[in-house]
View 1 (tube, rainbow, N blue to C red):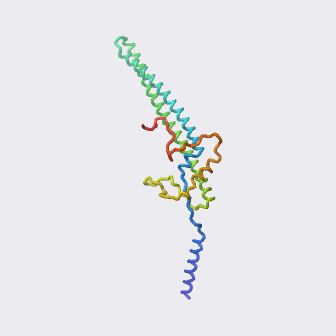
View 2: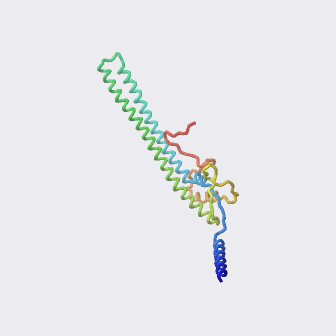
View 3: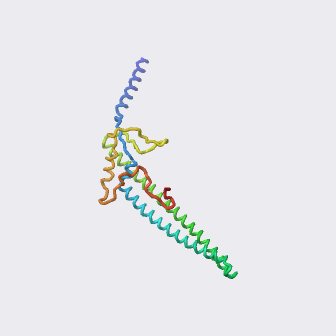
Length: 218
C-alpha cells in the first residue's frame, strides 16, 4: 500500500509537470534595432532640430559675451599703459591705475558670466535630451511590443544594445526575425506632412547635438 501511494504521488507530480510544460507558449523570437528606431523617429528628428537651433543661439550669445570681454581687455591694456606712462602726472597715473583695476574686475566678472552661461546651457540641453530620450524609448518599446505580439513573438531582442565587453547582445539572427522596419512604419505613420525625414546614413546612437564649450575636437 505504501509503495502504491508513493507511485501515485510520483505520477501526480509527473502529470502536473507535463501539464505545466504544455501550458507554456512555444518560444518565438523577434529582433529589433532600438537605436535605429530612436534615431529615425520623426519626433527625434524634430527634437534634434529644435535643440540645434537653441544651441546655435547659445553659441551666438557666447560669441557676443566674448566680444564684450575682448573690448574690456583692450580698455584695460590702455588704462594699464596710462598708469605707467611717464608723461602723466602722479595723480593721473593713480586714476588710470584705479580704473584699470576696476576694468580687470569687470573682465573677471565677464569670464565668470560666460562660464556660468555655458554650464547652464550644457546642463539644460543635456537634461532636455535625457528626458526626451527616456520618453521616446518608452514609447518605442510599447510599439515594438505591440508589433511583436501581433506577430506572435514571445521574446524580443534589441540587437543595438552593447554588452559589458562592447559587442552586441545579439551575435546572429535570421533577417526573417527582424521586425525593425515594420515597427518603424508603425512609428512614423502619424508623421506630419512636410516634416523633415531622418538622415539616411545616420550612425546608430551618434551624438547629433553640440553645446557651447563642448565642440568636438578635430
